[in-house]
Every structure is written in structure tokens, then in C-alpha cells.
Amino acid sequence: MFIGHYALGLAAKRLAPRTSLGTLFVAPTLADLLWPVFLLLGWERVSPSGVTNPFLTLTFDAYPVSHSLLALIGWSALYALLYRARTGYGRGAIVVGLLVVSHWLLDFVTHVPDMPLYPGGPKVGLGLWHSVPGTVIIEGLMFAAGVAIYAATTRPRDGVGRIGLGVLVLVLAAAYFGSLFSPPPPSPALAIGAIVFGWLFVVGAWWGDRHREAGAVVGNPGAPPRG
Ligand SMILES: [Zn+2]
Image 1 (cartoon, protein in one colour):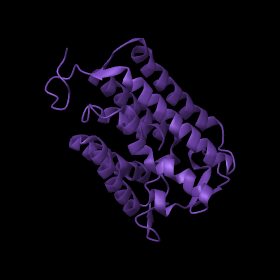
Image 2 (cartoon, rainbow, N blue to C red):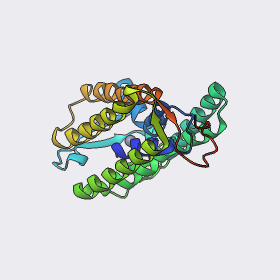
Image 3 (tube, helix red, strand yellow):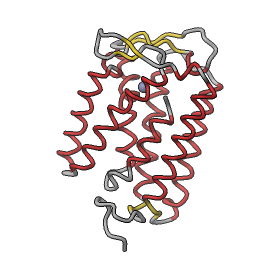
């Protein structure tokens, strides 16, 4: 799954309004931010599958440290503790912790059975990727809902906050559709591209979010009072 992960990050702003959207983008995509680093280190492996379905062009031979359920529970606890220690925002720490593990659940739904339960353990996956329209429709709806929730939970502080969200949405949507029509490059270009784009989206989200403020949600316990 690709933009579906960002959809959860956008929607999570409602639950943790004081958490930056940059952090809310790192958490659900942490597995995919670590994975290319581990590829470059040679800890994890991927190979071309030869399949034409754009979602199935890669065979994920091994990614136990970035993508097993057990490892993601560990990364989730670590990330939540570090976030809590740095910000003191307990509610946000719980939300980012859940987002880290959500990556495994969403990938479990989309991937063919290559998602390990634990390093060396059984691999599972429901294979939504076999249906290209099904995947695009479900991820598209999730993304639209995430954008709508984020837009309703925050309001622009200035011009950047007003157009920044639209630019971020367009760039993510363009990257998603681009990935459907251009096969991934061979490693290490694949890994470097994944790192560059992954962090580009995070920085874009962090920057745009700084130009918006929480508001417009009645009864939201984490939101500052409307001014
Ligand atoms: Zn993933």
C-alpha cells in the first residue's frame, strides 16, 4: 500500500491535533522509510518479479526487520516512547505508536503472502494487489477521506497553509499514479528513490502543517481553543 498509509496519517490529525503532520507521516510509513536503508545495508532483499501488474513488479524476498509484525510492534513502542519523551504529549505518542503498527495491517491486506509475522516466521498477505482497480479504488477512497478529515480538523494560518495542502495532495496523487505506469528501477536506485521520496513527503507535510492550526472541531479534547 502507498497513499493509504498517508491517508491514516492525515486522518490521525483529528486524534492528535498537536502532533505535526510530518510526524503523522513518518509513523505510518516508518516501515517503508527503514526498508530502503536496510536494502542498502544488505539486511533485506528485493528482486524483480517479471510480473506486469504494477503492484506486483517486485518480489519482497526478505524484510524481517522493517516489515515483520513483531519488529513493527517493537518499532512502534520505540517511536512512541521517543515521541513521548521529546514532546510530553501522551495522546500523540499513543496515536503515532498505533500508526507505526497500522503499516503492517494495511500491507497485510494488499501484499501477496510475503509479510512475516516475525523474523523467520510464517508469511501472510490477503493479496488485494491482484486487483489493480480494487486497490486503486480502496486506496483512493481512503486518501480522499484522510484529506477531508485533515482539512476539517485544521485551518490555514496563511497563504502557504491554504495552498500547501492542495500541493501535497496533488504531489502524492501524482506519485501514486506515476508508480502505476513506471516500473521501479533496479536497486540501488530503487532504495535511494524510496528514501528521497519518502522523506520529501514527510518534510512537505511538516512544512505545510506549520502553516495550519488546529481548529473547527467541536469537542476535540486535544485542540487548543479557537481564537
Ligand atoms: Zn510497506
